[in-house]
Image 1: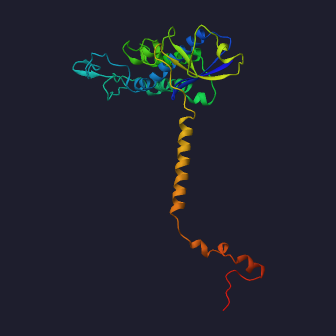
Image 2: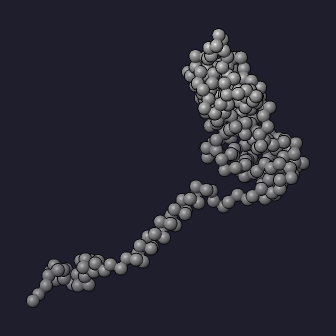
Length: 273
């Protein structure tokens, strides 16, 4: 299987396996599905945290106190009410012990799409990400069996109705490798050969967006390490240039007569009047 390292951004990348005999069109379509699922999961990360803390989202037309029902002039709130400081959510959170299932499931999903998986050489498939989204949906249903309102960002993301900037169209997306577009009417083997153990770094781009920037010859972490090494070396050279102290001349190893004195069995610092 050809290993495709899809690198959209430094913090958003994944590995995908495909046969060299596969058509580029089918590969691109599957890559777009994985990309869009990855975007949805990463977009859910913060919102799920606020959902667990402060409950479902308010209606966009609600004012700050509209989440409080009243009965005989008294406000009625749930047992786990926690006011949202941003006034975006109702504050009606579910049981904290139950909400942990949401946050833990979300953490597993984020780990699945993390770039750390690339470092560990773990590939992903669209089915793996769909299964993880289903687990998130199930955890939310346990906490909120009545469901989330349709205007809640979390509900839109798990149902696929949200429109995120980094999602791509499977019909028009283009695949680029080494500064060249891989045509969709070809097969992977037309570009990488018959070797199924090939690994290439590719990018997905929307139609009309042009050629993506080439990958730098070294990654950001290596570049930082190299700069730190060069800076340390420069500082050492600078200190050596400024150091004009000749106190070392009094050391025994710097005495030009030390060897002669040693051969004659005399101490190097012995003096005669």
